[in-house]
Length: 212
Image (cartoon, rainbow, N blue to C red; front, side, top):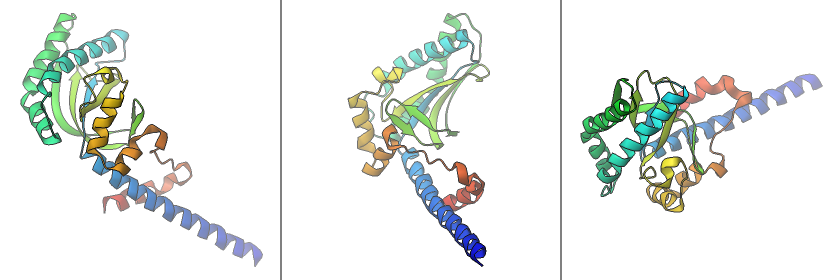
């Protein structure tokens, strides 16, 4: 009888833990969605992970960054930023293609504004949760190399943070577009990512719950 009660208690504890994780997972998934609705990311994907291709990626980043910095000077909200980027896609591709040619390569390059699924990413002192984000994505050649990224809106890209050093001014821009809760969650010190190592079997069910 005692063993049976121990079994009941164990099952009950697991169910409570699973329920708690489910509630937390759902809350964090919804919070990620509200964060992604307020930012625009900028990604540059290298052709490969060779040193030459990675250096080329950074050259393209610098060229496009220099071009877009002036374009986005007077942007006041996400909608304006998206419009400017969308209207500039052709010029962005041209700037990237010119840089590639100047460096002695003939890779194709594309620039698109699209929603894409991204893993958890650290950016300076911030951690952006995994999920779908809208992003300006520049793909060089096969696009099989490691990418470089930053937050284009609010503008955290085109200053020292171009080199992934997020200064106080850039952080303040992010604070202004997020709620207090959202801002606290993207602080790396806040440990946004929920690790559910012992409940990984629940993930398919939790993801369905988060969608509802």
